[in-house]
Image (tube, rainbow, N blue to C red; front, top):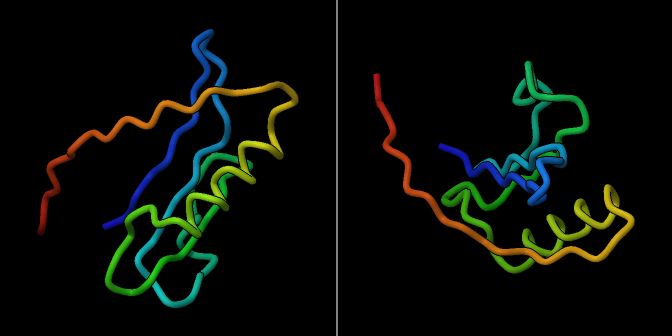
Length: 84
């Protein structure tokens, strides 16, 4: 399971996504097929939730890709997962 953080402006422009994996180490294979400019973060092996330190890194990602002031409105959407 992972957390995907998408930043989309009201006029349709979007930033590269942020993927948050529940891992201790980051492997390059996790980003196979991801959009260019995607940002990858790892959280504790037990959780892929956006915690305080992870959120600050997401904000740094937003600052890196924007030149104007942005208002962030977090929206949480539950997604059903399928286990095979």
